[in-house]
Length: 629
Image (cartoon, rainbow, N blue to C red; front, side):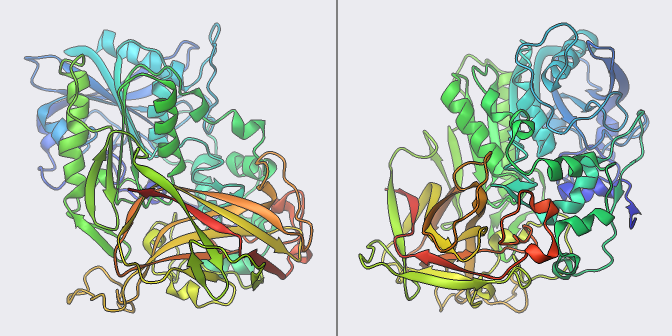
């Protein structure tokens, strides 16, 4: 079996953060303070905290050296390790951001059950048990037991606890609000996983092949606490990810790289539908009657976790009466925790000091108000603070989506037209989909562990392919601002019995748009003239068009409705731009290739199952936008 041992770099690659030896916030590296700041101003202690069932979890505690006052506790529970281990080894930065570190808080990190230096058995997205009895445990009970120990055993704490985390640690932050501990006053789940069937590894039933290697991080189990990585990572032997997966063929051929020891990949392969296994692990449905204040944070160009933060916020908002706020900026996964001045995604520069602004003016006041101030008073933070990725400016709203919106539909017409009037005569736009020549999700060749840049990539390369349908408005005479969800209502048919459907919403820049003279952010082979900025995309594995739990084949050549929900956007298409929609059936190797012949489990499909088919999109297909008035 082709494998390469990965040590600390696995966690680096998966979270795209610099985690060589420090338990810093995902994606963050502090340059504003000296490397010795935490060591000069904090003491460090490592303890094993015993849970109610006897399992002990490794916990690292950084306490301010200034003991003249009491401090709140900020807790991050993580599967990515509490490194650096050893009470004489310090992280360069502790806590969610430098401001909270410099003003003084008790910063706590914990290896979750079954990971790194903690005891116990790990379980991906461990199911929440609402009514635990006896010594039953879940991540909520582990959080409760941890908080209980901390407030009773850590000196100079003020009795208030906050939780936070990005990505998987964001999931544990969400989980913490279900603990019921009275000392937990505030939580900030950020890029938080809400359901692994819709975040990270699977999107609407389609397997994200680009995350296939990442299953190593979560799939290999360990028997005892360890300070060294124990999992393995497949060596694909090439820089060309597209060609590697194309040559590999059916997913079943990838089994030569993993065996049943990769527990998570086995779970993915054996549970292709949204069955009880996945449903029980979702956290969204449990977010009711939440008491701690919550600040949900996400990136509008986060390729990994858009479903989680949007649905975490909306579920709490609908089912609880706590302070619940949401922030989305022009960030990829975890960018808001970084300190880079220029905020750039792919080829697009959105502004400067946007992450520092969030850390200083939103995140820090949130935790200070609920952990240090008088939480009974109103906090000076908006309900929803969103970044318009078209105008490149912040806006605040009393609700999200905003109240002053309306639904507007645009129809996909022949001759590549996107109009608000549908032609009454039935017509189709047709294309041939060959799973052996799939549409790339990016022009780039370099292998990346988990792709992110493509979220703002120029889509001209795809628009010029015959297997990608293009629908485009006339040049806009006025600004149009989308503020909320997008629903693609496709009416389609196929000559086969299975198909994927991918919809992309694109901002077409004017032909006279100038590229900066220094070309600092734009790839050398591109110009911003006529740039096709991808604003949002989503896929639907067609077999799940009516039910994520009960797949069904297409009837060949029969007109069929396929609805695709695209995650929220906040984007202004400016006057002089055009709105474009692209429809295709492959997005490779971001998602795996559909054989286009129905099989019960695509992970077991054979070479002969992959067939070229002709797909049709009918002219009564539409895309419904949430438009700000």
